[in-house]
Amino acid sequence: MTSELIAIIGSVCSLLAGSFAFAWKKLIKPAIKFLDDQEELKKSIQTIKNEVVTNGGSSIKDAVNRLDKTCKSIEINQKVLDQRSKATLHYHEQALFEVDAKGRIHWFNEKFCDLTKENGDVTEGFDWVSIVEEDKREEFLKEFSSCLDMCRKIDIETTSVYDQQIHFMGHPYRISENRHEGFLIHLYKEN
Image 1 (cartoon, helix red, strand yellow):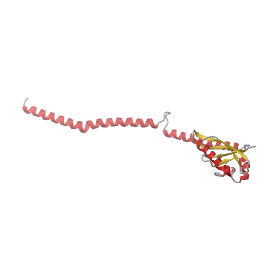
Image 2 (cartoon, rainbow, N blue to C red):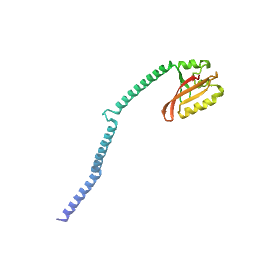
Image 3 (cartoon, rainbow, N blue to C red):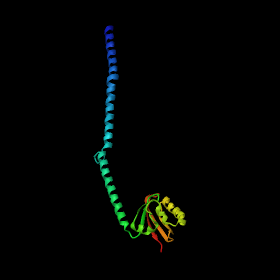
């Protein structure tokens, strides 16, 4: 081989190596990265698809719509049950009233009105407390507040403003061990 031929082959090899390095760096390596990225993108899309479609095969939107219908149905049934129980208790033979979590009256039955009519209107807020004799009211409110705070049954005997022995017996509407949404209280005169 002649030195010219070796120089030409060397130049061609250098040119080929340089071209290959250029092609590798500028074309092949980015193409491989693009394909890897595309595979990663496919995996990400599959993950999103798995999260969006519920186990039953329907979409999350379908599940949310079903849940919305179920919640509305529960709400309607709860309103009916609440009204049914209020209607039943309204004509009950015992004087009953409900207070909210803070002790304000928000419902009462006909017998409660009959029992308290001599006291005027005791059907708003804390007005019902005016049934209790003024000298006994502070002690009554202390015990009543304790029952509200501790979410425990109310069982308080006291004296009315007409010097009659009255008894408050109430049960909390417990949400949890330490939380309630009010009380149903039975009020009656002692014999």
